[in-house]
Length: 363
Image (cartoon, rainbow, N blue to C red; front, side):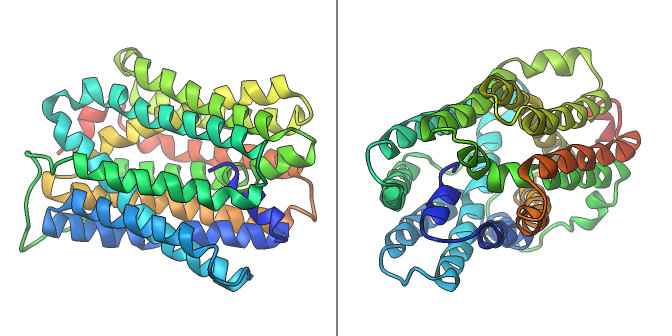
């Protein structure tokens, strides 16, 4: 949510505290996805976990008005919130892929884009509302959204093709030891490490440059629009280009994206173009990841496979957020994004171990 750190800043937290709070909210990805993935694969009740998690999220946003407004109390709430948030994202991806069955390669992008549409609607709507009401009221809006998600979760059944409860789970280590799988998750860590200044401080960065809340929301939304376009037409890329080449392109264009954010920091059009590259830095990379997970991890490992993907996401962003928050005042936002542009290129060192096509990595 692009406005949460603005809320924290409004509540009197400094950049270092915001960086720590952002990393705390993300640090649960070190372990929470694996916990939820194990429970999902063991029980087979993925949608039940989603319903429990959305209910807990609603409780968290209600509690924000009850507890003392201190760093420690907000940190605790963010820890609990993100722990349950991890039950939703990874497992709902798995539910979607199971429901699509043999049509997943063709239809996943078309289904996934509606999550992006929801994000755009949320960003624009909340941004417009925050032009009218103070940002201190943001938790009320999030409470409403979480409550609606909880209610809507009851309309989705458990996928018919998914495994039910398992007494003995297949080990993940043999899969994670495959060179192509290990290389991909290493690249993911590096890519998301470079994303940390963006996810944690981009809104604050733009606000300090006198961008309005509406402009900030529009830029976030345009990033997601580009993501939707990628989800709709990515099959063309997979048809004509190798998997190895596409991952390399994602890394290079992400580096260019952070350079544009830094160099054209005062220019709306420059930021807009940088956001359009979100189609590659997230959209295309995410589609590759979903194919990798479904083709390398067995049916009984899908929950934990999705969970490991989320864990590496969290590790990268958490470590990056801590460092970005610490150095934000020592350096400048522009310098931080330039460093991110250099860091992401290290991922190219691991592209060699990726197969040219995803199908070749399947044992």
